[in-house]
Length: 459
Ligand SMILES: [Zn+2]
Image (cartoon, rainbow, N blue to C red):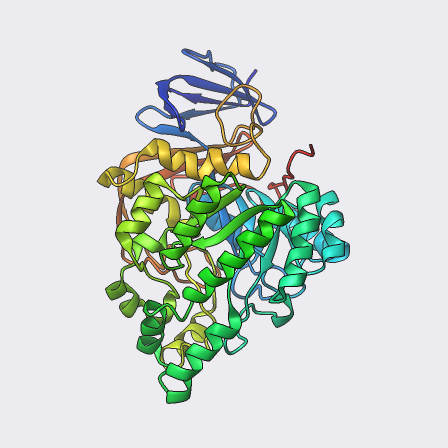
């Protein structure tokens, strides 16, 4: 007796593809074979003509919960993830209270578990070196550090979350190294950024959305300062022996790719999380989007090269929602408005479209969004693979289905997406988490609170 049978689909992994049926019991894959007798299965999904992929991860979701749940909460965020074919999310902390202590981490876990439609991992906020071990013991998937402070203090959204003191950063590295977790860092050189941005833009009154795009293109906003911070951090991480997970690769200028390549070539355990905006949004599109993006591709051919040949270990499309009215202020003052991109629901359809366009292979996409993140975060082979004994997480896609992405269809509580009006070919049509169909043809049907926090295997 099966709980679920996937019938007649083509199974695609990061390494091969073949036709087979899949039988699921108690949330686990128990059989992969040519022809399963599904007459007494509780549920059957007809996957004929569809591709069955291991469940897709999204490792960069700011679900704003707890804190500013008018922008997003774990329920709306996990629903839009399910709608977009995502079975596993990692929430990025950037709200009050940050999960930096035992109490706040446990509160966050309890809250997320009561609301989530998909499985998830939670970063512990890297703020206090002496809390790192406790966060690891509670099951944090990694430690996240904001090594940044915005020139006008609007980011991180709780200014106390910024760790700009490299001594403290180093001590967080030392403690994280003892746990084997990754330390995920948003790098910066905040004093340099502040001086340049005030000198050339803010002090001259050039602060509207067009001035911001210019400051970004020049490498002042989210640019050279981040590379400078990365250079220092790579060295400190090396001597601390920590596994460094570099956020916002592709947002940073080309120097970041060079530094990561160099560190990798010397055998340092460093991972690059590539931001898909680096090849999806060009400068003309950024000028049109104004404050609905904070980033555009600085060097799109180089970003595409990183996507296909490295350095790129995990692929994401930032999900950092803000309320429409707050964002609208950015047209006049984009150095004082909260910045982000909304894209978790649109991420996988846009990547399937890339596969259809021939700019990315399906195998590479699966590697970067399922197999490799599962390995990096210590959850493989429980997830990230289609194999007997693994969690029955699947993203089932129709490569021929055409769709126009829109703000109307966005399930984000903020009510908009940066990719309104973008046409794609290739859509997820079923999302399955531990044997439960949580999305069918765009309709989210799972239950609130079904999703579980998953922790790395302890060594
Ligand atoms: Zn972010």
